[in-house]
Image (cartoon, rainbow, N blue to C red; front, top):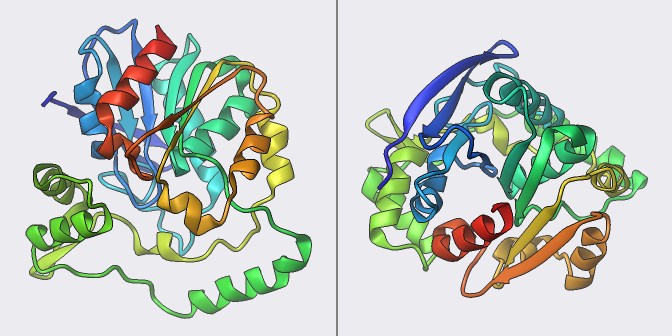
Length: 287
């Protein structure tokens, strides 16, 4: 298992944690994790990559070892602003190789269109966006968010890290016990004699604003870097969102220069299920 070090940066008033697996400085990759996840989740993927890669993975605000925002809600544009500042600190003078999973893939896809000159190549792992919305959904969306603000959010407690590992394996039957126990130690933290996820409970609140597909597409259409879009053949998240293969195919047409692959025998956490295959696809694309 490759060793990682913890770097800390002052970013927009928060102490930001970035996990760093040291390699050759000229071969940098930035990995962006998903919702209710942490940077250490990429360990298996990093182990499958060539050790020459110099890998950086931030914990998003309110996750892992990065400070909580202090607000009662988290807003998507903040991730884009945080990413811009982090890249400026770590690789200010050259376009970057960016890999994002789920939430991280959505952030990366938008950023690649907002700041196209900053991206050399972009890999999107299951960051297919959210279901399209209509303006008339806005009143109920705001009302639901305001109602949730009246209740203090909390995260489910676990008796031990072993129990959290049990839950991870229940959620993902492909996950080996060794990997589940590793993830439990990074996803969880000690709290009141038990274990809770290492995340701000405020992340569980509904978003007050609608997902606007036309705005996302406008960003995607400005992406000038080559894009590798990788989906999982058995993505439970895709099914839960009720996005069809046709929906995804239409979204992929927004990118000018795109390669598309599906990883077999993998769910939404494809970098846990098939890290060697995901690493192979990424390296073939970046080299």
